[in-house]
Length: 190
Image (cartoon, rainbow, N blue to C red; front, side, top):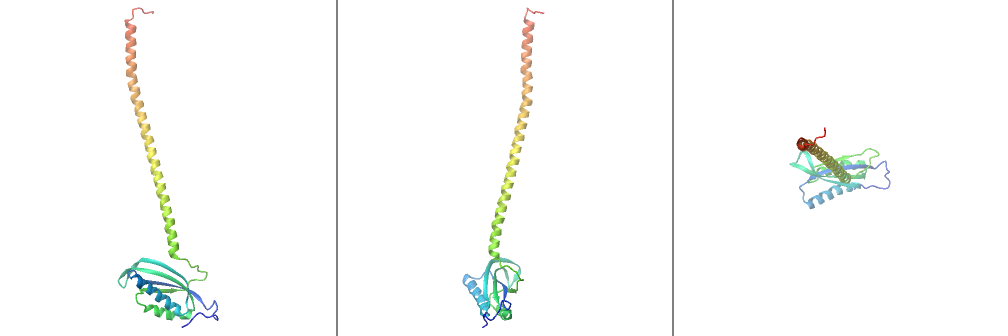
């Protein structure tokens, strides 16, 4: 059972990323047992866990052993590269493990938890969606206000059209009354 001993230098040890995929329909107990088994396999070969990022249930691009969905977990381990082959063989025969991949990240790679950044992104997207929705509502309210102003102007213009038409009738009445008074008046000072 290899372990990380003090005689190994940082050059001998490397960080590796293990991504595992297992069926999403496992019971909670089966899931916990499977993850413990995977961790045990890696740690028995001297790996020291740096991080564990549970991505959760995701759809698959194609069916794997009859499954359309699966759960993903990404581990980061510091370990001796000579033990990778034994880990790979052990993971291949692990029950309920659909797929796995071991990747050596490039130098300067910063480990980020996808699950946390995904939640942050969702919150930002939600805020962005709210902002866009509010802008859309404001534009709609502005258009409604402009339409109401146009309707008020039209109503006022229509009223003005009708008002002068009524006024001449009233003026004609006054004029005809004045004419009659003048005509009937015997004392004309001409």
